[in-house]
Image: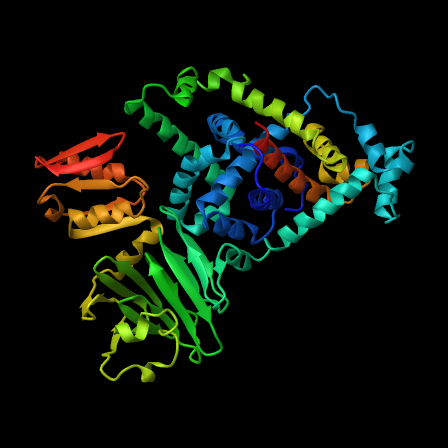
Length: 371
Length: 176
């Protein structure tokens, strides 16, 4: 990498500074620091990368200037010109007593850039606030969060609710005095809603509007509609009629009473799942193990007698290089199994053992077809 | 736990690397300057971290993290040996390096290179940062000792260490 543009440089500096500060905080026993560090790591692969690199750099630093060509005394003298000739011990005492020191030009230069870094570092103390820095604020008051393919992120909202965003997903969020509105624009998210009866929490897709007061539920925008799974508590589900949701703002205005009378609102309890089609039909079923629907948080993919088309579709959400199914009939074959989202090899192994299939692995990608 | 941990003050990462894998450091040493190359490792480590329960992680996050990373690198290597790859510099280096323990203390080119680049980058830091890094990292002083030697507060020493490391990473990334 050669020289960066100012914006990239600023961002990279922020990340490097963050990683370096975490490394520092782990040096001494500090209750709570480990927990905060772990949740920072779990925020993004990028944090993991920056931290690992910082570790390696720090490790290499122990052998810096191994030939000892640099002279400490000269550097101390440059930092404190008037004390250059005094023994170090006195210098230390003066510092402890808080006597004003005369900074060198270099130190002053360092200070001005330090001020910039401090401003940056101030944001690091509050991770919840830090997370907002990643998002795009739009003029209409909608704040957007996005994840890349393979990435998962967790966000805490200003009301204390938490959003877990799955791979390749996109939400827009707007809070007002009376509403908490979320638009799921792409992908899947799990919501742990902080209880607040005065401000309903509403999640909408093109197909459905889900309203909760305080609960935990998952919303997944699939190609064929929207699937809502309730982990805890209950939510209200209604189809999003074109007239009420097509414009981003309209889902937000007014209470549920203002929705057209025709709109059937369905109550969904824990361990229930609703599927809302594009056409607005709602089907509800009981699910035996509702936590399976949020296994994605542990990057596990669970399939129970599902078609290969669905399974590969799920895997591909996590892959930048998708698995392709070719030819008739191959998508309709059904399988059951539990996989790691990051380990497509395990799926490929299973498929390769199926005598009816040919699995073709080449640098161009993985193609599966019937024999 | 108020005992001063002098060993960790000079190189927390060092002891953690010793406990785990020199291979990991070699892998990373090559990637400090080409940051994006560490993405594969980070993705995989991240994915596995998500599967570990927080209670376990929090007990000793650093050694857990390095343990996972070392494991992932070993797997990368095994996987590469199975794949049809014509030439890969990592693999070539690793094949030359069977029997890691027998070669303790030997410098690998990537570590040597990183060290030389760090020495050059050090000159680009403000003097105050240079001073603190030399006292703490090269001479192995505790923060209290370094504070006394430099005529700075312990807090400032800590701040300079954090800043200097971050700056070094940016300088390294920008120097071809």
